[in-house]
Length: 262
Image 1 (cartoon, rainbow, N blue to C red):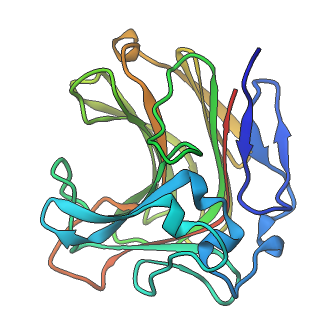
Image 2 (cartoon, rainbow, N blue to C red):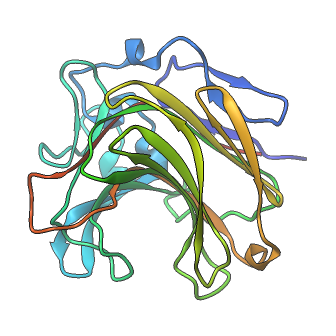
């Protein structure tokens, strides 16, 4: 019997299932359901996410666990992760200067997928796995990663399977990793004006990546070298530029965020 779990961004946010089993945001904006007077956990199901912040000690960014994030009174941070008082969006800020992980030169304010029991998500390529979002990028120096599928257990690689990038000129690219050893191929997707709302759906099923941005879908094959690895989703603001500036960076606002597995 197949297990199916769907975690929605807000209690009244709707989802639709397409021909590939892809869960996506409906045409009506989820922003109207967001409460600007609560922490992000009051509008979004953060019980299945861990938050990484661009602060902490060198090589060891501060992480906030699901139990701290969930609920209307959950964790927020006025500098890096908060609810916008004007529109209720879950807002992420990642400056160019910040604490990074040992395998990256870039700071991030980003969610990492977890299981409902508090353990780290780590799913196989088999099955149907979907990350859906409605968002807008309101500032970015060069480019920012707003969604990922990252390699989990199964080997020594610390690479992502894919990263979705938004550039300062509005261009959106999908970066797909050539192998667990590295090397990324960039695929141009579309252009969305800075500050404009857009939606994405990242679906992984078997050996295929299905990406939908603003309703237009493209597909990419996953090399067999990734078969041994499990995966997990990430979403937020993973800034792709670094400097000594704490005022330059990437601000990303989410209006819906949905994870589904079947």
